[in-house]
Length: 186
Image 1 (tube, rainbow, N blue to C red):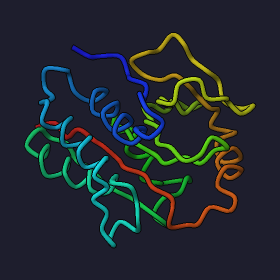
Image 2 (image 1 turned 90 degrees about the vertical axis):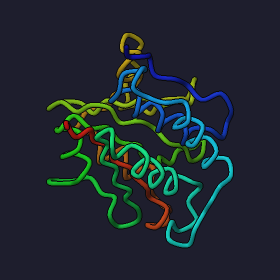
Image 3 (image 1 turned 180 degrees about the vertical axis):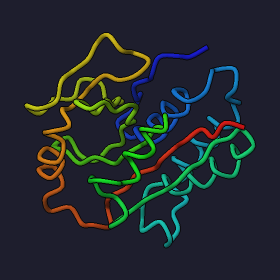
Image 4 (image 1 turned 60 degrees about the horizontal axis):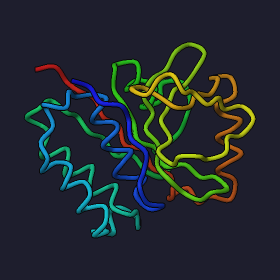
C-alpha cells in the first residue's frame, strides 16, 4: 500500500522527510522496515559529516546508508554534488526520472535551504513535493492539491532553468546536491 507524501514537522527536517518521501513513492509501505526510517533520522540529526561530503548535513551519509542497506531490495542510490549537479540534455536527473526513479534535491530560496522530492517528469512539467508546508511559490510554480501521492508543486519545463538559475545566484558550486533513487527490478 502506498502512503501520501509527508510534510516536515520541524524547520530542520526537510532532508530526512524528502528522502522518506522518495522511498515511499518507490516502495509499498509493507516493504519498508522501521530501522531504515530510524537510520535516516539518526544520520540526519547526528550530522555525521565527513570531508568527502563537503560539509553537507548528513545527506551524503544517508545516501550511503541506504545504498548499503537497501541494495538487496533493488535500490540504486547515486549522490551528486558540486559540478555533478546540472540540468540539461542527458543529465542524470532526467535519465533517473524517465526510468521511474525519484530524486531529492537541495534548493535555495528566500526561506533558506531545504530539500525537495522530485517525483515525475512529462514533456511539459517537472513534478515535485516540497515538504515545507505553506511556502510561497514564485510566479512560474503551480501549487497542486489533488496529487498527495505524487506532488504538491509543478513547474513548466520551459521555465525550469530560468527559475533554477534565479535561485542559485551567489550559491557556491560545492553547495549543490542531488540524490538519485532508482528501483532496479530483481
